[in-house]
Amino acid sequence: MSALRDRVVLITGAGSGLGRAMALAFSRAGAIVVAADLDETAAQRVVGEIEAEAGRGLALALDVSQAESVAHAVATTVAAWGRLEILVNNAGICPLTPFPEISRAEWEHVLAVNLTGVFLCAQAAFPHLCACGHGRIINIASLAGRTGGVTVGLHYVASKGGVISLTKALARLLAPWHGTANCIAPGPIETPLTAAWPDENRELLRRQIPLGRLGRPEEVAAAALYLASDAAAFVTGATLDVNGGIAML
Ligand SMILES: NC(=O)c1ccc[n+]([C@@H]2O[C@H](COP(=O)([O-])OP(=O)(O)OC[C@H]3O[C@@H](n4cnc5c(N)ncnc54)[C@H](O)[C@@H]3O)[C@@H](O)[C@H]2O)c1
Image 1 (cartoon, rainbow, N blue to C red):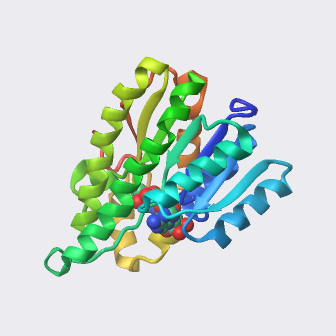
Image 2: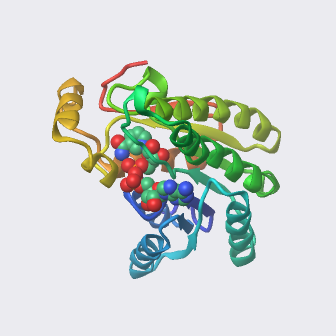
């Protein structure tokens, strides 16, 4: 219940879907949750839910692709709570644009949010994660970054593959300070992101999942809680698949 008592966690993209589920799960485990999102109103709604359950949280506006915005989020977190112990890089976008139609600007935007955003947040948080002696980075990658993807854009696939490699490098850098960095690679999960997909895309995926359904955000949150916990202190540089068996890697 209180496996993360008083740990300070910054979750990006916390206003929706997986980020919201992780924010609630971390709060229920005793953590103090900084919920940061491009959509500040959505982040505030999630912190409202946390406070309604007597949890502690703070909502922040954040664009992970902008270094100044990231620096502000980390500084505000540390000013409010005195430390930052867990960083969850969850914010992401997933256009379905077919390969021939991806413009250079769209390619760069997806990379800026999904990959550069992880780099910027990790770099800004790093001194605090080292200082606490038990820092955690949890990056939300994707099944698509492991397998090449089927229905999603090639820029998304490339960005998530990059997140998996970046996580391994971060794991090496954090290790001397007894910190860990890991990825979760979710398969298709029921969130507003996948709800916006054409029905046939979701059905195509569902039929390929041995467990016969899309995942629930709470099932990704449970994996993140494990990676954040002391129980996972010897797990680093890993990619944890939460995908109903659609790919067994
Ligand atoms: N849902 C799935 O099936 C699935 C599968 C694999 C990986 N993922 C990954 O999980 C993460 C969350 O996905 P979701 O399904 O919850 O999506 P979602 O669209 O429901 O939520 C994403 C959140 O990120 C925020 N965001 C977008 N750009 C941002 C930016 N520049 N800075 C800060 N916040 C920003 C959005 O405002 C939104 O609140 C993403 O990285 C996604 O790629 C999702």
